[in-house]
Amino acid sequence: MAKKKSNPSAVRKSKSDKVASWLFVTPTMIFLGITALLPLLYSVYLSFFRLKLNLPNAVPEFTGLSNYIKMLTDETLRISTTNTLLFAVVSVALEVVVGLMVAMAFCSDKMWARCATSVFLIPTIMAPVAIGTLWRMMLDATTGIINYFLSFFGVPSITWLSSPKTAMISVILVNVWQLAPWVTIICAAGLKSISPDMLEAACVDGASNGTIFRRIVLPMIAPLLTIVVMLRFVDAFKVFDTVYVMTNGGPGTATEMLPNYIYKQGLRFFDAGYSAALAIAFVLVMTVVTVGFLKLRDRLEAEI
Image (tube, rainbow, N blue to C red; front, side, top):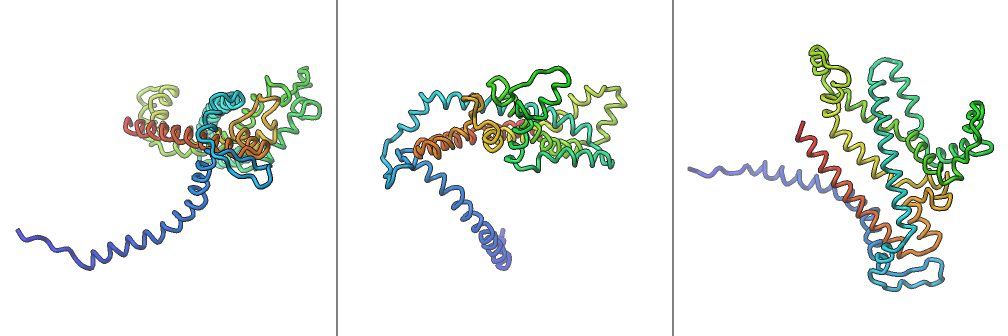
């Protein structure tokens, strides 16, 4: 059987397409390499040295793994890690529950639903620093409007941001207020992708609203919810602006988060080496978490 000859024009077209693709991709790769990969590699290099930024003409001193070993006995790091994990788990759980409930309530093309969704989205488009400043004033123990309204119901003044018992609750609720609308928009898009015929068939068969939600709606949007939880969990671990403005990690270490602790090590205590080691460890943990969520999503999609 004669071997089929390749078309020279098709081969040239394929090669030109590959060249064109590389011409489009190369500038992006160079940009990402300069803005992301280069700082990351420099941080890896710096994590093996001791460097005090506040000393004139400071020279990096090679210390090997001492910065990483120091993490094992750093009590403040343990506290900030626990705080960050608590903040991320509780805030993301509340955001998903609130966001999904609001999405189901506003999942309509009617004008009132669109207007309500637009109003609900206002916190999401506000700058985190502005949100932190706004809520810091509202939660002030003496002049805040929250305590003013609570006084009408006989509730005594609450030191929202000055007490270790309420500071973490305050920053979590503010985070939920800010980002639950984002979850609502994503969940609403997922709910609208479900076939109405499937829901109507379940209703005809006598299924209750709870059964429809558990057996049809929730499994259908489970992969989407996995991505939402992943994005929000990683973002919650990176929280800095709002907490920094509201409490700056206080009182004491009650709201000390990992990003704030890394920032303090580098720019308050000027320990560049230890700050770089903390940042690298943070990136590695977040990478593992992200890969785990992506594998979970693939498994859920395969089960649908």
